[in-house]
Length: 183
Image (tube, rainbow, N blue to C red; front, side, top):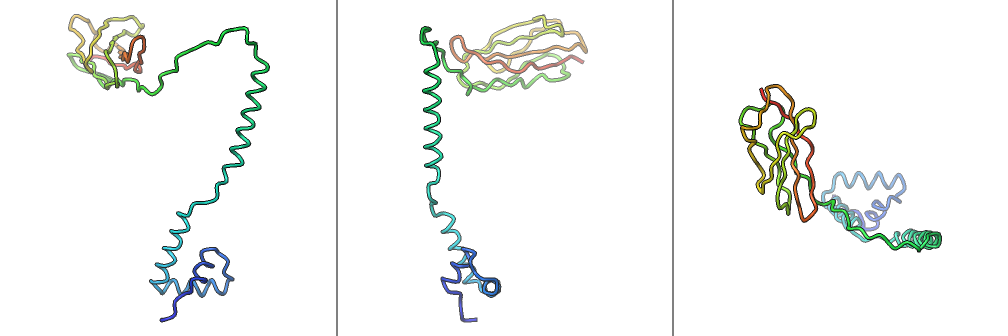
């Protein structure tokens, strides 16, 4: 086979405008000819990376005009006699600490372990009984702390613990409550 597909045949094949008889001929040739197949693949890659027409301009303009109209209508219906209320933005990018251990049944001594929180200055730990009463509370700068033996934990009784990370002055984030018990 010495005849290869023309550039027009490849372009028409890529555009999907070949008549059915011609398409069958081109498909059969591409099945047998490695060089034409490689040229078709290269041309299709070029077409995929070609920047398309910017179609977002009109919808973006319409959306901006609608937003401006809503803002004008909303501002005309508000009462400006009250001063604006300023509020700090919520800190939502700081991940909460995750209680790692103990979970479930644990043997003595009880050591609470949790994940580190970026920019946390200290951690406050609280251990609760099944009624929600605080049995023990402590603070540390580390990510683990041992519950002292002076805290009496009954066997098979459910207990709960939680860690609160202080990330800055008057800001903190708490973990979920974790349940554990003694064998």
